[in-house]
Image (cartoon, rainbow, N blue to C red; front, side):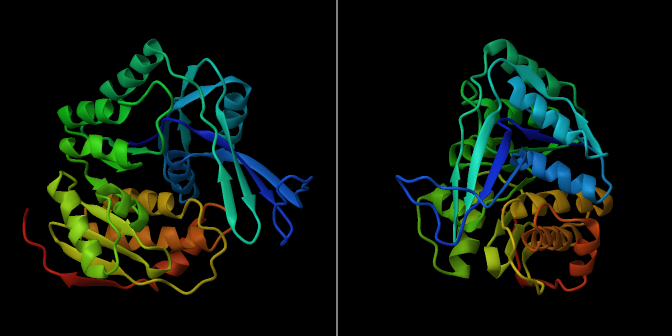
Length: 311
C-alpha cells in the first residue's frame, strides 16, 4: 500500500484578482474564488486517485475546517482516509492570483503529546511491503516528527520519500530515505549556497546522497528535472505545453515516481512517468488527469548525462 502523510494539511482558499493586482490599504474584490483540499501529501494522493491508484492518507485534522477537508476528499474514489483528529482548526492557506501569485499560509493546530503518539502508532503498524511519502510542513508541537517517523520506518525496513523544508529534510537523511525531491531553490537552501550551473546542481545533489538520501530528484521548473542515483545521473526533457498552474506539480512528480516504481522496480521508467505527471499538472488547472499524463509521456526523453560512482 502507498501511504501519504500530510502532517499539516490545509484548505486552500484561492482568490483570482484583476490584473491590476492587490491594492494594499484598500478594499479588494476577488473575480473568482475556489476552496479545496491542500497539502503536499494530499496532492500526491489526488494524482494517484486520478490515475486509478489507491492510497491511504495520514495527517492531523481539526475542527470544522478539518470536517470540510475530509468531506471534499471523500469525492475521490481511491483515497482511504485515516486522519488523526485533534483539537483546534485545520489551517486555511490563502492564495492570491494576479500577475503573480502571493501565498499566506496559516499555522494549523498545536499537537498534544497523546495525539503525537497516536500518529506514531499508525506508522508502527505498517510493514516492509508498504511505501510512505512524508511531505509538507510540520504543525506546532511536532518539531521532531520527521525524524521520529523516519526512525520508525527505517527500523521496519520501509521505503519512504521525503519532500519537506530544510530542517525537516535534514533530520531524515540519517535514516536513508529512498527518495528526496527538492526543487532547485530548496537545494540551495539545504546547503546555504547559490547554484548557477548544471554541474553545481549535480554536485549538491551528490552531497545530499552522501548525507543519506538514496535517490535525489531535483525539479528545475521550466528546465525540467534531474535524477541522481546509484544507477546514474539522468535528465528529463520537457514536453510541449502552456504553464497554467505550478501548484502541485512537484507533488505530482512524487506521485508518478512512486506509482511507476512500485509497478516496475525501474528507476528510469519511474522518472519518466514522474516527469510526465509534473508537466501534466503544470499544464492543468488542478492536479492532472490520466489522459494528459499518458499524452505527454511519449514526448519525454530521458538522457543519461553522467555515470555515477557508488558512494
